[in-house]
Each structure stands twice: as structure tokens, then as C-alpha cells.
Image 1 (tube, rainbow, N blue to C red):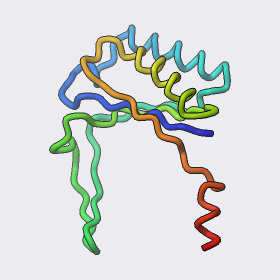
Image 2: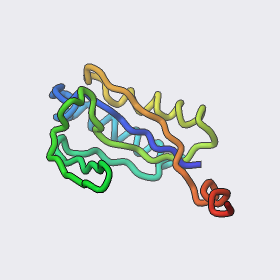
Image 3: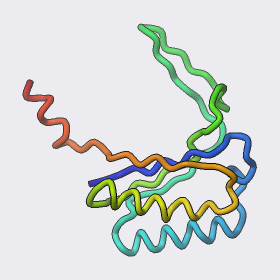
Length: 124
């Protein structure tokens, strides 16, 4: 199974957006370890600014970020392979330790929908 670990950070916390050498070293060690044991499938950080595209009825509107009304925003993600949610959560618990010095953050662990998960809906 594949899981996405989405890390959310405080939008106004400089430590979340300006990585120090220690954070980079910890992240590199995490990437090397999880790559070597076949768990890591991909990992990326994201820039602070961006856009949101919303649809309400037929109306589609793009809004530039930073994202108003959001205290916590996505700072990046890791895509991993794990046997179940418990195993994926354990990887997330290790991943969050990379961010020592970041005041407040969370990691959302979500299983990726695979083709076989959709097949039952196609038969209806």
C-alpha cells in the first residue's frame, strides 16, 4: 500500500520555511534510510506561496496565496510504501523528528487510492 504523509506547518513560523543545516541533515538521513529500506517513494517540500482554485457550482476562481484563513498550511509531503496504517504512522512519527525546532506542526497520514480500490465502483 502507498501512503502520503502530508506535513502541515504554521504559515507565520520562519523555522517552517527557512530550513537550517541541522534540519537539512536530519531530512537527508531520513531520506537515505527510508530509500535504502524500500519505504520511500518520493519526498518534496513546497513553497510558501501558491494558489487555490475553487469551484462553486459552475463558477471557477483562482486565488493567489498565501492562503487566507489558514493558520496551518501544507509544507510538503512524503510518499511511502507501508503494509498498513500502523506502519505508515510509525514512519510519520520518525519523519516529524526531522523538524526539531519547528514550533508546531502535524503530519496527516493518508492511504493513496489504488486502481483496485476504484474497480467496485465501475461495476455499478
